[in-house]
Image (cartoon, rainbow, N blue to C red; front, side):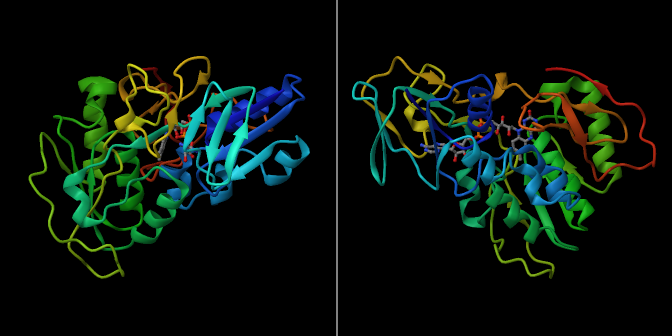
Amino acid sequence: MRIVIVGGGLAAATAVTELRDNGYDGELAVFAAEPHLPYERPPLSKSVLLGDEPESVVFVHDEQWYADHDVELHLGTTVTAIDLEGHTVTTADGDHAFDKLLLATGAQPRHLPLADAANPVYLRTLDDNRLLVTRLREGVQVVIVGGGWIGLEVASAARHAGAEVTLIETLSLPLLGVLGPEIAQVFADLHRDHGVDLRLDARIASIEGAGSDVDGARRPAWPSTTAYSSTPRCAPPTPTCTPSETSPTMTTRRSAGSASSTGTTPSSRPRSPPTTSRALATRATARPTNGSPTSSPTSTTSAWSTSATPPPATTSTW
Ligand SMILES: Cc1cc2nc3c(=O)[nH]c(=O)nc-3n(C[C@H](O)[C@H](O)[C@H](O)COP(=O)(O)OP(=O)(O)OC[C@H]3O[C@@H](n4cnc5c(N)ncnc54)[C@H](O)[C@@H]3O)c2cc1C
């Protein structure tokens, strides 16, 4: 039997790990659009963005692991079509057969057309993180659109780097939808205490100017739409995932019969438990260890830690 997995994120890496750990010894191939080994994204807005950990922490396994476990890796290879009747996926190289297919194509940031002219950073990939790291510097003016987890985490990292940060949120408090008013207020106060200019109940009318080439000098603000939510990448279409949200576009000949791990709508997306304390502004990072993916939090990072011994963290689910 030959199992093909489309996608190169945590879901894909976890699937191959579990398949091998549970005794599957047939053919296993991963087609991943990004050129990187499968990696997890939480550190991209936390420890790696802060510079506390090397970029290498994001990778679920090293290249040797895939070789040792006989997993075919097709990196930088986008699946553009799926033929469910013929049991093939199509890439630029041609058609590839499968017996079982797993879609692990994840999500992508929602596009904010208003910001196009400003050449914003959308923080989703390792490459986005690398770009952001080069831009977050002392004195640079940063505008972050969206006061969700990722927006707040980037605000924290940007202040840590010495940037001036304005964060724009349409609701009356950041994280209001996920934490409720009481705890959301704590986060708002925390970020204001650390110099973030929070603009709440605010909507962007227009975005003008802004350069993509930040050289350390003070420049007109450039926006980073890091927390403007995300949409699932999907194929075939389902009631919660339409072709207009699919990127890159995949076509299918039949819409039944295959497993899918295309993510969920933003409102129902499962997340790691957050760390909610006055001294910690970022979430716990769920990270697989020793080839055994787990959802247990293994580390927390924050630019806001103010004491050597942070108060005990309380966790909640949402
Ligand atoms: C900056 C950031 C911080 C986050 N922090 C947290 C956190 O603290 N806690 C938490 O629980 N969640 C967090 N998340 C969300 C979490 O990362 C996602 O839930 C997770 O990435 C989903 O994994 P996935 O493998 O399903 O999809 P993804 O990570 O989206 O991976 C899908 C992969 O499939 C590839 N792909 C898509 N279409 C194709 C195609 N046609 N052909 C080939 N490849 C394709 C994509 O290029 C991508 O690499 C964070 C996300 C981001 C961006």
